[in-house]
Each structure stands twice: as C-alpha cells, then as structure tokens.
Length: 361
Image (cartoon, rainbow, N blue to C red; front, side, top):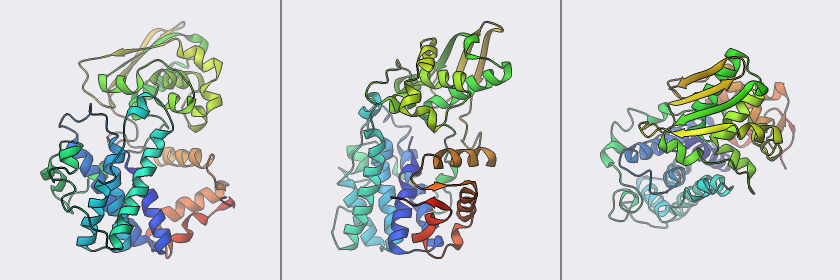
C-alpha cells in the first residue's frame, strides 16, 4: 500500500547529485530506502489500518527518505537513529485528498521526500531526536499505525521486500488497473468500437470501490479525478484503446466523447471480495456480441504479471514525452542504456544530462 518509487528514487538522485556520489553508493541507498519502505508497509498491512485515513506513502516514505539520505551522507548508526526521530516529528499525510481529488495527493509524496532529506541533514549537523521512532510509546506504531516490529525486521539484510515491488502499467490509481486490463482484453479480442458498446459494468472490492468507484466528477482537478475513477478508466480504454499520460490531461479528461461513454459505465461493489487491487470483473454489453465478461486476477506490472521490456520502454517514452527535458528516440535509448549500467557511473551529478535535446529550465 505504498508508492515507493515516488519517494525513494527522487531522494537518492537528489542526494547523489549533491554529494557527487558514484553509482554504487547510489544503488546501495536506493536499495536500503526502498526495502525499509516496503517493510514498513508490510508490517502494518494486516492490522486493520486501512480505514484510519493516513496516506501510507507519506507516513512510511519519510522514514525511507531519511534512510536513503543518511546512507548517501555517510551517517553513522547514532546519527541515522536521530534522522529517524526527526522524521517522526514531521510525519503527515491524509487520504482526504484522494476522496476529494486534488493535486495535494501528489505533493504529499514530495513533502515526505523533502522532510526525510531535511531529517538526515539536521542529524548530520548534530540535531538530536527520539531514539524509538518506530516502537516507542508515541512512535509510528503507537501514534499512527499498529505495526509488527518483528515483521519489520524479519530476515533484514537477507531478504529484500523491494523485490516484490510493482511497476504501474497505467498512470492511474492501482485500483483501476485490473478493470482497465479486462476492458482492453475484451476490446482487442472482439474488436469492439465505442458505438458498439451499449453499457459496461465493473465489479470490484469494497477497498477498490472506496477509492475509485464513485461517480466521475472532473471538478477543478480533472486529471486527478480521472486517475481515481474506474468509470473514466474503463471508458477511456474502450474509446482510445489504452490509458496513457495524455489520456489524463485536462483536455482529454473533459472530452465529451469519453464523458458520454462514462455515463454507460456502472460499478458494482462485491462485498465478498477482500482484494485491494484485484480481482476485477468487467462486463460489456455489445450490440454485435451480446454480453461479454472478463475477470482479471493479477495486476499488470506486479511480480505475478510483470511488464515486458517492450512495455517498460513504452512507459519510459510515455513519461518522457511530457517531461521537462526533451529527448529524441536516440536520447531516450542512451539514458536507458546508462540506467542499465548505473553502477559504473562515476558522478551522479550529471546523470540526467545524457541525451537531452532541450535543456531543463
């Protein structure tokens, strides 16, 4: 229940650039931070915390960012413990900005990264903090989430929980992805056209329904509303044959054609489904084929359904097309190749300059 890669890699890149670190300590910090964030999430996930309303990426991410920064700054055990204590003093993050879709949802991850870095920098300067940031009476587990400290530490340094990380195939809430996949499978298999679709129905779990099952109301933040709407996601999959970054921009999210199709999508909450991202069942009533149905049990991009190299490169290109620094195809390939050899990078401060055809401003 945490988005590791919106917190840990930005932290690692920022500190590695500042410290002129080479690729190996960068990777070590990345592994340490991401493993800790996964472990924090796993230590809390089965203890009835999901209804408390905390935004897990923020409240766990700040500690992961502190660990990542501490490693790159070369902090010793005592200073790293103080960094965790300082992070505890800044923990924040709420799901309110998800049920009231707004850009604050994105900013919370950035706040966690910033606060984690600040915690490590303050600890480096000698600022002290509580020692029991996780297990103390008013630590993370006592104040914010019930947690299992034994699970947090189990096989530490031998088993890496970050090996279980997923990479999102679609730029939307993960609760949409099995529904998107089911809709796309039916569209491709039966060559469905939007005008052929009489109606569509999505059947999802209560957890998924709470986050993405409501009516699609673009409001002041159409991009965020689109990302947290399974109705929009399925309609977009049917209308455009996919869902990429351009499909969640304001103009696309307000497109009358997709909004018309959204009105034909209904959502059913299956109270017997305990899943958080899967399974989902998509049913499409077609003029030519009658009632079609598809159940998807595994979220694309998870270890159970990993993305292919082709899909990963397509995702990279989709992201870079809207990036600040523009790259042509050759530039993208050079950056990907450099990423695959990152342990050989002598100075991370110039890492992202590779292949740029338009400088960052």
